[in-house]
Image (cartoon, rainbow, N blue to C red; front, side, top):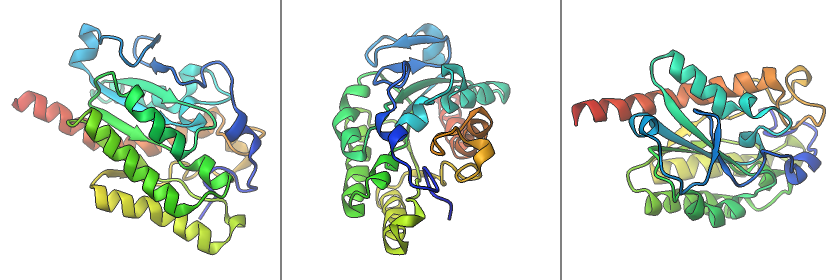
Length: 239
């Protein structure tokens, strides 16, 4: 399979990306304003499905304008399809899965309906232990459930660079499969499918998608997220 974050295994930008917007602040895509995770929702937000995108620089939209990050693109598609969402971008550049475990409780102070978890890319670039990744993924999901028992959870699959060897890449991939199965969460198949390793769809670092690539990433996410958003709206109507 294609490498998750860089066919060539580059590290510098996933680990050190620190531009404005690539921070721990949660950013609302709908309404175009920054918001603390504990900020009260507006009236429109309460009637709209709130989706928290919890991830790394890939979620933050490193190297792109905030409006070009895939959570915002997903929100636009959702609105066009009559399923509006309030997309909250909580991407943090350079974060490993261990960092995500420490951050999840704080970021979930704000009520949400759905959480999309994207982490592990930086673990792969540092060749961190796949068993530890699996434990961290499970801990993140359990942390979400403790903080927001009613929230639906999606887990985005990442892939390790092939230069780390067949055994490691297999163990890394299986960490996501096992956690998704054991925890009963919805899977977003390989986040960068159709983008990773394709020069024309990535920035110069060969790690982060450019705007054309980001559109594909948004499509990948929406395919898995759409049925979940539909389910939330159905339950609200029936309730």
